[in-house]
Every structure is written in C-alpha cells, then in structure tokens.
Image (cartoon, rainbow, N blue to C red; front, side):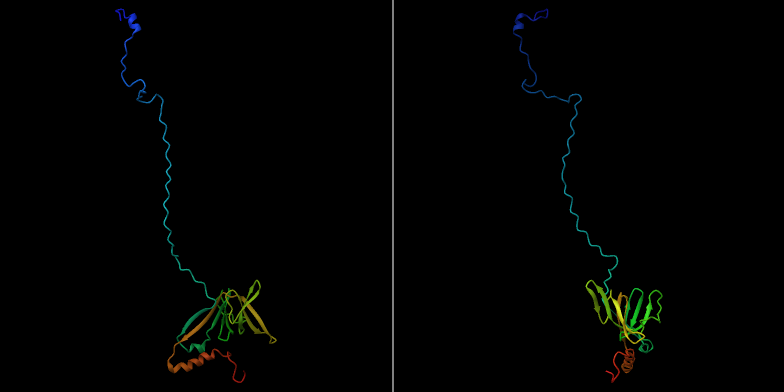
Amino acid sequence: MSKSGKLSKTQRQFPEEATIVGPPPDVEPTLVGAPLGWAPEPEQPTAVQVEAPIPPPAAVEAPSEPVAEPRPAVEVEVRTVKNPATLARRQLPTYELWTKNRVYNLDATMSCIEVIDLASGRTDKKHTLLGAQLVGGQMRTPDGNELSYPLPTPGSDAVFQKLDNKGRVRLVMTSKVTRVILHVQLVRVIADESEMTWDHIASTRHGAWPEPGHQ
C-alpha cells in the first residue's frame, strides 16, 4: 500500500490472505443469548396416570338397636302362680287373641271369658262374644279362604260360634288377629297340697269333658 493509502495494482490483483479467527467457515457460529423479543415456549406437562388406591372394604356397622325377631304364629308365655288359692278365686286366661282394638281372653275350653278394650283398658262386660266358643281362624286368599284350627293365626279373622235367640248355632268373626298367646301356668306346691291344687285346676276346666253318663 502506498503512502497515499491506496492499494497498488499488485496489491489489488493479489490481496493478502486474511487470517480467520474462530471456527472454520463450514461450522455455524454459536449464538450466545436469544434474539430480541424471543421467549421460550412453555413446556407441555406430561400427563401421568396414577391409579387411585383401592379402598379397604367397609366394615359392617352393628345396628345401634337389636333387630326384633318376627313374632311366631303362637306365642307361649309361662307364668308362675305363687299362691294356688288364686286359681279358685280368679280364672286365669289360657289363650289371648289380640286384634287392633280388643283382647279376647279364653279359658282352656276355648270359651271367651273376658273382652278388654285396648283404648280404655277396661273390660267390656256386655260384649256379644262373651261365652262364645272359638273354633279357629279364617283368612281370605286369591283362590278362596284359608282355615286354621283350633287357633287363628296372625292376619286371619278369629271365628267364634254361639247360639242365637232361637238356639241356632251362628258363626261370628272378629277383625284381623295380630297376636295369639298361649299361657302356661307354673304352680309350685308342697306334696300334701298337690291333690287340692289339682282340684282347683280341674275346676277351671269345667265343661271341657262331658258329664259321666252323657258321652
């Protein structure tokens, strides 16, 4: 180059090789930093399926109150009679027939000896079934009637027989029976009083057997 700063003809024809500093030309230069206005794209979260744990089987809770068992067709109650003399003073019922409104007490011969009104708890001394005899029960079914004897069953109508004013046998039915109870009397006596006690018990069954000579 001349003093005037111009390249000579030789220099223009044969320029000096430039010294390249850095990676070879065929290698992309590494950019440090991001261009202006560039922002990285948010990464999409990868959905990971996590199986829910299987809960343990729930424990069966015990009922807070005991579940009442269904009543049997005929309930049996055992009563202890402390004083055998009461057998002669008051006739204890052998059977009880409960309906929605009344209780019919029967003796050992199936005769109605007392009718109690449940609403008042009083004995109805003028009830038409006093003295009538139980013959069984009757329940209506889709195909006809279902009969039971010698006792009715819950859900059936108790059937009694009695004589009308002309001495004819008539059948009378109650409303649906809800309970049938058989009472068993338990009497404890000393050996010397056993025969006397049986006399009292037999007196409560008067009419259960025919009189001698009238069989």
